[in-house]
Length: 302
Image (tube, rainbow, N blue to C red; front, side, top):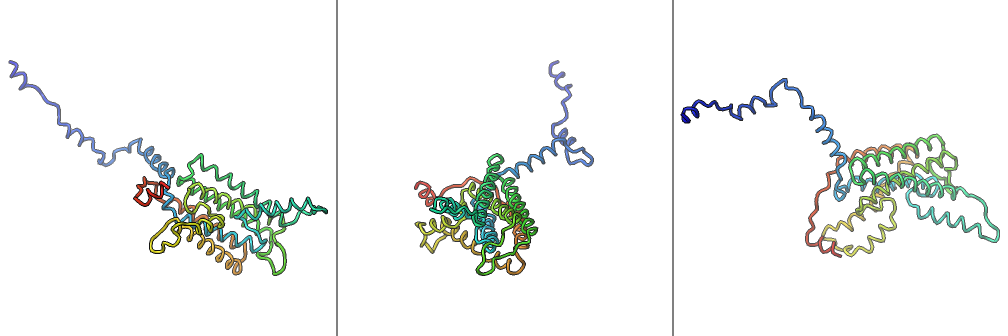
């Protein structure tokens, strides 16, 4: 009797048939409610991925080019730099020293005003760069948005210089020609954009960290132990040479553009270049785990 009972048992349908009946490839099947959430998660993960700073030579090199480009614009008009704050700091200290003369010099000169505006604006732009610590200083979203803010600051400088109607460069033997309040404002916006750029490049901690000054680059290049290893690629040396070359190229290009189209259109082109760099950051590959070879291990140990 037990044997007959087992023969009369009805088995359930195969599991394979049940899965085929529920295949998601059937036409007209409603989209899964979690698909949109998965898409959002994928997009968010893309934007908040950390980029591989060692493979971001392109946009970081473009930063160096922009330093020379913008410095050429302001130096041609006021004999001062919007990026290098060493000269501005010393100039302000000399201005304070004049107060201690036997006959104190109480004149607040144009050069002193420009130095103060540039320094304060540069620091303000640098503090804007600290917002990257909240988002992630090496994420795609911050590098793209931070560069976009640089473009907005450069655009503001363009509008201010355009409205001020000041000359593009200093005639021979004259002093600074950006002497109106709007010109001062434009110079401040240029310095703020360079301060933001400097902080963003510094936080990536690469050979392009000092993308706004060359003094330290020259010193590090001359003191590089592998300076004369000409038969092999040395990143520490070659990236410094690239930084110097791109800054020189930027300054040369900026001065040539001023001669052709003036400072306003040159600044407008700088705004467009920063927008291109902003989009360039979105194309950078994500950070990967790096394995040190023998030379890198030895260098890392030192």
